[in-house]
Image 1 (cartoon, rainbow, N blue to C red):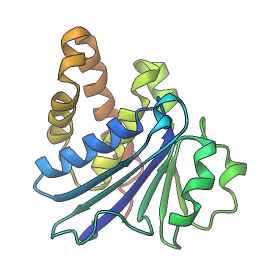
Image 2: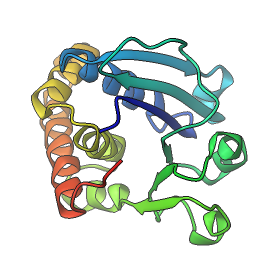
Image 3: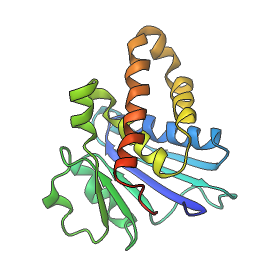
Length: 190
């Protein structure tokens, strides 16, 4: 992993973009990293485009926002116009082909990494935890410990877990699936 990773997560309100991003930042902190998390939402909570800027580093972070992403996760087609300005030649674009068509990203000159998180979640768990599979994949890619991701989820979703205990099982299994998916893709060198 590079000393500093700039991650932009983009999708629609309701997809758990902010939960994914905040949990990633918290897990990075629990893993001993320096972190920065800047959510960008408003009416997005009701279905608009939602963005989150996360930086994870081994050293101090100079400024919380950034102009270009090292890793860009996009989970909704209509978020693509909002993320174009953050791309650079060596950006890694992580996307779900069930949510993003190849036609909509074919002209982007970046490394593209598909992850079938929605299909995996629907087939093996419940559809609403697909973002947690992506979270596990990202955390594994960034060298964040699996136990720290699960702890961060517990901290962030503890109240929901009390109301629906099965949600904890689904989320923890989704994290594990994300880590497994990264291993299957032979840990990208980013």
